[in-house]
Amino acid sequence: MTSTEKNPPPVVPGRSDRLLLLGVARSGTRWLATALGHAEGTRMVKEPDNVDADPTGTGVSRLGFGPYPIIDRDDPAPQFRALWDLSFTNRIPNKPGLRRSAARAALRLPRGIRDPLLRRTAQAMSSLPGRSPHVIVKSIYAHFYAEWLISHYDPRVVVIQRHPLNTISSWIELGVHGFDLFDRPAVRERYLEPFGISAPGPNASVTQRTAAWVGLLTTVLSDHVDHHPEWLVVTHEDLCVDSQVRIREVCDQVGLTWSEGIERFLSESNRPGEGFSNIRVTREQPGRWRKRLSDEQLVEIDEVLAQYPSRGWIREPQRLPEMAGDSR
Image 1 (cartoon, rainbow, N blue to C red):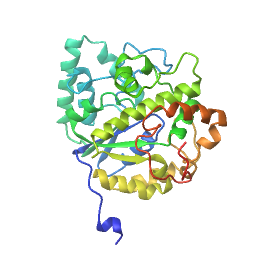
Image 2: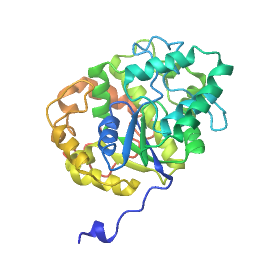
Image 3: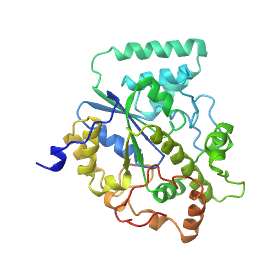
Image 4: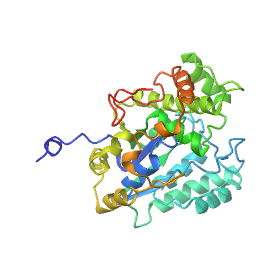
């Protein structure tokens, strides 16, 4: 019997039928959520709040909820309550095209009709037979309303982080955008001014602006973790070392049952891939930034992240595989 079997890790507090996975874009949320979604009696819901966020970063679609919504803990936010009621009932469409079509149709209705209708729909769907015992919902947009989610739904929470250089280089490579985050008064007042952080200027390079976006978003998640030490924080690079063992440990800590489906997914996804796919050669992931970033970019990133308390981490690990001693 192994030491892990003798002393199993404590299960993360929260409702056993609800798991919320949070992280910054390109930090491994899809890979981990998909793996956990193959656990016995489990279904994964992909980013229900990613509805018509303008991918160009030039604005917010009038039909969608917009990227990185700011919702205070005590805000009724009925349209979001309806969205997340449906998500945690395990009934929201998982196909992006179908989900967007349903969202567009609902959002065209007058608010006085739409919100009660969606709430009643969620309540009716939750009573239907055939619901999975566990629902995993992952989000890369919930940074500024995570407390609202916790207060309404009490899920078990996992936060995944990735080496900031890997995250930033992936954002640059794929053109991921931070939208209007630095133009929002609430963001400036709550997260920039208290730390004396300067928003990127109009002449900032893509590398500098990207580093600032990642620095801000990881700082927000770090603040949540400070207030919720019971949340499970995992590091992408660590999960990549021996994914079968490490993700089995995550399952144990969040109360999910390991399955052959998880093992098969991890094995089949461990091959060359690119773009937004979650297919990658796992052992190559920890040091990918070394081939993506120039020395000049590393200097730019270091100067930007030096302003942020966690320097691009949510919780900086004591050591990293293939990167021990490298904290840039």
